[in-house]
Length: 410
Image (spheres, rainbow, N blue to C red):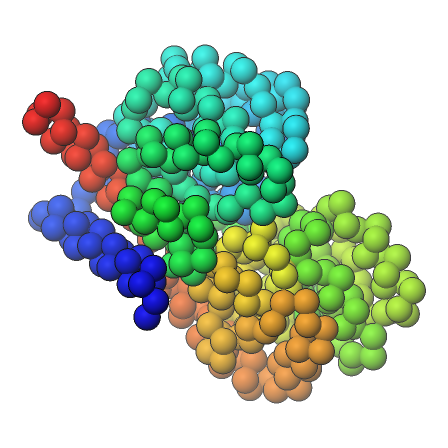
């Protein structure tokens, strides 16, 4: 094992021992703990995107963290400022004033953060304005940072932003990576390995509706039950160009559910290739999504760039007991999907490999069912929302205890 890998995994074992050492007696249910957590993330243009039926991957994970931890509150920015309650969780959005290089800004966030009463500030990274907001308005309160991704596309911004980012991450009590794969492959996380812990993202089955029988039958009549399914935003790093290019001549439908900036280009590509088996479904709500997951043969997640740090869609596929097809890009996707056990992990941007993986699962119903069962078992063992929330709950208490110990010594 390389020296950096030994350091990383040695540190993970150390943190696991610390976690075990601080657990005494019967665990107190998270709902009864009186810790006030302020969760901060960049947000989407519309506050409604946080509501059930609309959330993206990060919103979904934040909601799961908050729903099991009493005293949680969410603070974000939005073009539609206001306040809503999601199953009893307060969500407040200050006004988004402008956005530069995919970084939204709103000065009201700083004053709101300063005024909020919170035992711990939990910020979701990357968001340069969020870093600045904590440094200006965080009042040196305990800070936990969930590190979702390196800055991949805006390299010029990364060069300018580097000093601020390091100042911010140095202030953090803990940095949480969402997978050991991302920790091992991120040059930024390796700089701060002594304060990094790994807590995988998780989702709760109870947060999803059961698909209506009528919806399932309508889909079955239209597509049968052997189709391949992609669900997610149609963005540049999702590898959907390669999925479309793999489609011509395949004996099954490929369904692409979601909207995004790449949709027009992908539709044009499908038309030019004569890929009539590719169907663009547009936005689907959670009930429609669960019907699609119920019927599909496999979930295809062809993201080919490191901008895809984890992939909540993969967890949804596992929860539904479906095999997965994903790419090995050195991030959490290959941590979630185990090659040859829960699905195929293929080289990125490889049309031939993607085509072969889909043909394999299409032509072997028994293998698809076995891998789907293994995927469901892995979801239950590692990726439930409760497991994620409990891990964060223990981390919150450890950080507060360590802060109290330091103050007592001082």
